[in-house]
Image (cartoon, rainbow, N blue to C red; front, side, top):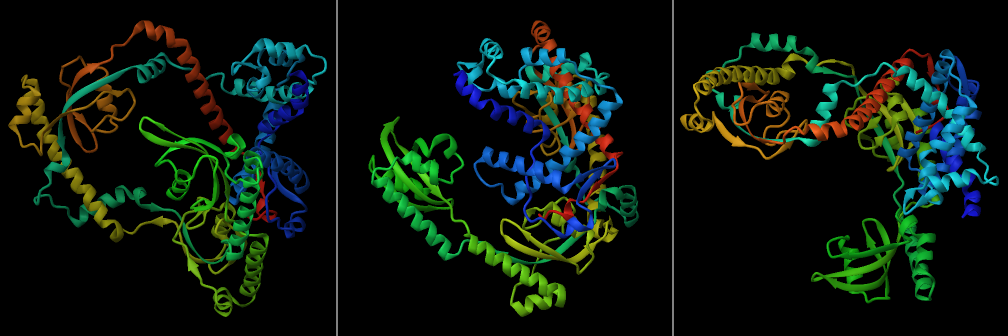
Length: 600
């Protein structure tokens, strides 16, 4: 066991270091021209330069790590996310590093020793070599610490890197406290439930032709609530898309490969090894293609039909589904609780574009871009007979309608002028060239456009005021000891509704009512079977009675008190530190030039 662990030591220690520094991957589509314009500087953080060389080196290492972790190439969207994580890791390391120096934070050898011996990292706790029956075994870990053949220096280096940041967080969050009321509320949320019945006076029931809204009222409402009608800057893009959908030849290639695999499998080759080698199902890493037993209705119909029609030991396929081509091996069949079940394994081959298909699509996109820059977007599209399409308008959220997350392209779109043409971007749909088609500046929706909204809001206010006057009459009847049933029978059901809920927890939505702090508080504080006063919500007014409620268990509360306090304190400290860090970042001088070096 120890030999195996020595072989693995550098692997899992490297994972620890990578997890702390942050995932960094090499982005596709490097823009070489950017190297000259910014002297190889990807960015500056409080004056500290980050060169493309150091950025790229870290990216390359972590790109390999990411690929090993998932077993496949990261897609475009993931690549963009990872590039942002890279940049964020640099910001954190530099800004927090300066704070560590500011607070003169030091880490002693004694502190590192205590961490290694008493608080092993989670990754080591999860290592099978240190577990017994699936749980971390401290004794096994301590025995490993005594083994002179194991190099523990990487763990020491890890803690030497991590502990200053932990100490900084302790200093920043030292003032964070948890009140007794917060602990009690959390206990109630986890342990208490209530059930109520209620009288509901809905504002909607007081609609009437007599409710009139004047033009002046609508204009006053518009001015008073103008921020409700504020709109951010929006843009529309024209685009020409060069599809990377698999060609008929690409699909034929997949079919040929499937036939070769089937022939190997029928000739006696180990099906699980074939699955490991060829299957593109992400689960193959864990199940080696074995799907276990399944009944009808669990798989897509084409797959299910082939699997249930085949005999045990038979290999069938290729079977085409929405996921690709499947080669299926039926292992056994059985009946369980009157249902037929099949135990099968499969190999999935996806229809993907070949390198030639990708290259041809990119060539066409590059040619179009060159002509569009010289002769104009529409002229180039007309000459080359390409269709120009247009996105719907969108805000700068890093998302482009029809394409998904494309932060770099969205950032370009909101910096460019009308008529500007983008570079070529690769997306899941293919290569694309954008042109800014329309710019809608930020501002407020005009009154005429939202006039109807203003009117309906005022009408609701007036209906609610009528409902309030009606509810005040109900309140007097309750004070006169009239029962809920008597009150409900005395009025039209549209205006007074009597109903009850199922049990609900503290802090959760109330069945049939929704979220209401006033009703929630009353449900967990009123005496049982005692009516509440008038409770207001956005939709109308309520009176409630508590039918049953979990009693507050003082003994159980005492037992859980310290655990709840520690959990809440940890959560509050994390939130506080995150907010502190965001302010630190906002006040920092950060220059981000990544768009000059990397394409989306």
